[in-house]
Amino acid sequence: MYSTKNLAILSVLLIAVLYQYLGNNGNNSSSQPTTITTNRSQSSSTTPVVPAADVERIRKAADDPQARFWTTVSGTVTRNLKDDTEGSRHQKFLVEIAPGLTLLVAHNIDLAPRVPVRPGDQVLLQGEYAWNNRGGVIHWTHHDPDGRRGGWIETGGKRYE
Image (cartoon, rainbow, N blue to C red; front, side, top):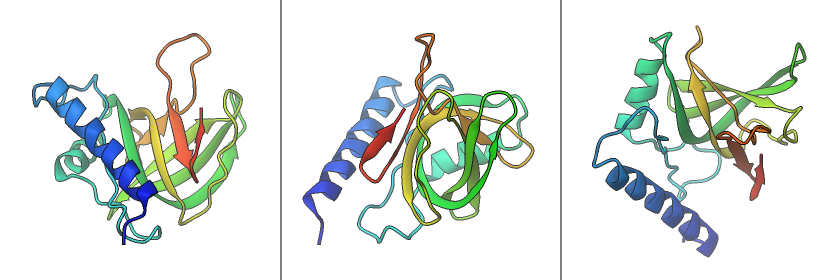
C-alpha cells in the first residue's frame, strides 16, 4: 500500500513541520518557512492536501501587496508558461497547492538548471512568496551566488538549485 520511499518522504515532511512548529513555540513568524505537505497515499495526479492554516496564510497574502515571506510548498504543476527572457531569464509555470489556489513559480535559469516539469507533475519547492495581482509568485528557487538564503525545486527525485 505504501512504498518505502513514500513513507520516508512523508516522515521527513512531518519532522519538518514539527520542527518548525516547535521551533516557533507554535507561532508562525513571517520570517520562518511555512511547510505544506502532500498526501502521498494518493496518486500523483491528485491535488496535495495542505493544512488549512497554511492555505489561509497564502490566501490572505494574495490580498496584501506588502506580503513577502519564505515558504516551502508542494503541489501539482498545472501549466508551463513562456519563459521570461527580459533581464535574468526565468522559467515560469503554475503550481496548484490546494483546490482553487494556484501560484506562479518564477525559477531563474541563469543561476540554476531548468526544471523538466509537465502538467500533472508533483513538485516540492522552497522560495520566497511575493504578492502579485494574480495571487502570488514563488521566486528565489535557486542558490544565491552572494551566499544569502536560497531555494530549490524538487521533482522526480532530483533537486534543482
